[in-house]
Length: 489
Image 1 (cartoon, helix red, strand yellow):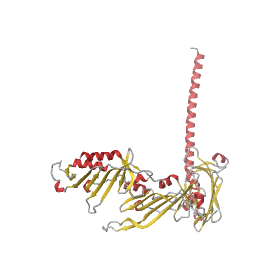
Image 2 (cartoon, helix red, strand yellow; image 1 turned 120 degrees about the vertical axis):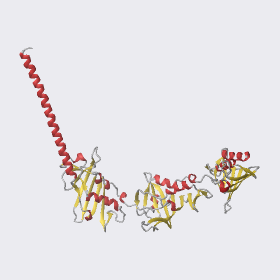
Image 3 (cartoon, rainbow, N blue to C red; image 1 turned 120 degrees about the horizontal axis):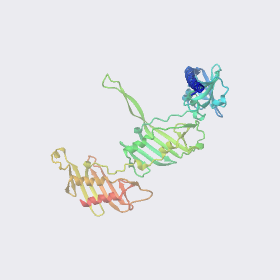
Image 4 (spheres, rainbow, N blue to C red; image 1 turned 90 degrees about the horizontal axis):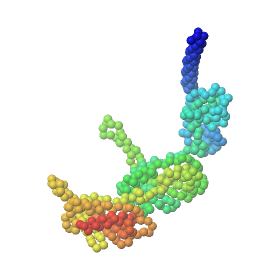
């Protein structure tokens, strides 16, 4: 290689090396500056986060006004109560007003976005979504404007405050207490507190007709409508149903004076729900142990009645309702009202008319079309069953005067208790010829007995009449199996 070529090659290597060094230096400097800028930004954000955007003494407040879109709402304070300036008789939810005051009392910036307000449109502050103003006793005011929500951030909204330069990012609480319309600020009365165990009567009326009713009887409940006779209710299902009549949720007070009920269909309600209950009263129970704190218990107090009238629907499908003793007309969601008025009575019926313990029975008489069968089943005393023989009978059971073994007695009993209501008998359906009658006599001191009559209904079901209750049908196959069991024995 010539000396000239060697020089050119050396020069090229030196130039490449210089480029690498300069590039590395640039990256180091750029990284340092970026890190420094980020540190400066974080430091600035941390510093601004402690800055109070609003810190007014709200005890001196006399007026709150806020504008959302085309609606401006003005509230004034009179005798320590906030009122709607347009109608001072209208009851206002004081808790919602307190939430508004808390914004003016203490709101901190998350960070400062801009030092001036030259680019307000960028933050939605040229046409604010909310402008809120607080007036104090000395007539001074403080106000702020809310722009758009920060994009890609859950930190809140862009805000500008009177008397402060710049645009800030503030928490969502600067907007949320002012989201209410005038109507939504009207206070809602509390429905009475009702304990489901203390309900002793519920009636649902459609117009003037009772479509469902249940009442307590001794320690149980009976359904008195829509059936002609009183029908025993299933204890678990009726308990679940009654719990739905303990709480009432209203979404809005649409007319606090209730002067024109026909406007809401409440002059002649479409439905009426009436709940009769005992007021729950708490009382202190002293402990026998002097070192133990006294506890409280709840007992039944005075009888009370709560009535809810249900009228028309609004455009969104909510119902207009009115509580007894109140002038106000409220809105209640369709699902909440439906749960009260659309009751499937059969779903709370005790469907097992023969849910007896064999040991409590003294005598059962079965009558088919042409035969009579008599069964007795007295439980043996304990000293009669102390034998180690596992085959020892636990019943003194007879069938038509002859001894029955436990297996046969239990089998017949299981066929008897399999008789269950499977459906309601609709309209004027009525059973025809008698298939079977059953008289059950109990061995307790009351000498109580019950009679069950089964009549043919159609190809799949038989009507069952249980002590005058004739509204239900049983599976024909279950009846046939019981009769077959009787004939087999």
